Amino acid sequence: MNRRDTLLAVLVASLWGFNFVVIDWGMGSVPPLLFAAIRFTVVAVPACFFVRRPPVPFRTVATVGAFMSLGQFGLLYLSMHLGMPPGLAALVLQAQVVFTIVIAAVVLRERPSRAQVAGVALGVLGLAVVALGRGGHVPAAALVLCVAAGLSWGIGNVVSRASRAPGGLALTVWSATIVPVPLLALSLL
Image 1: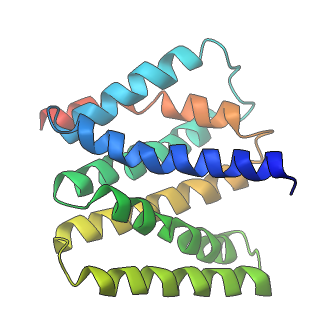
Image 2: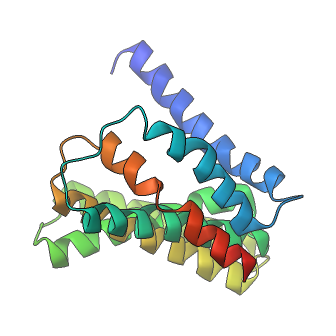
Image 3: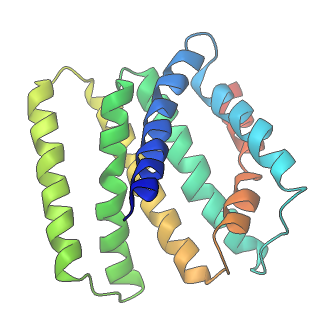
């Protein structure tokens, strides 16, 4: 990687990480599922007017949306609402990598490479070190919900890959449009 690519990668990672702080700030005055519904309404709904619908069945779009957006973000926002700190949420949510590789191995019969296995093992070790360092200061329900958000994301990744949709942007945008209504309904409950 050249210097420009490295700087862009650092910028993307920084913006992604800062996103968790913004989520935490936003939920200070808005209930978690309502905040997630607002997020998807403001971003995904207008985007569908600029991005063509992917050439996959609607059930695929809906399934990806249910797992990759609704499940992941609904569970993440609830987790943070129950006490998961933003920085730790960003780390724990990366359990999706493990879930994605395991689910893809079982469902899609994709055999992980040695490098993937080594990377996952190192990542899990890192998560364990962070978890031990926290000393149990995170409510168990918040931790379980954050891990479940990672599982939902992993399932969404595998469904997305299995769909063989060309490019990822169209499927991501259109699958996100199914999220606001269910989140609003869940928020009302």
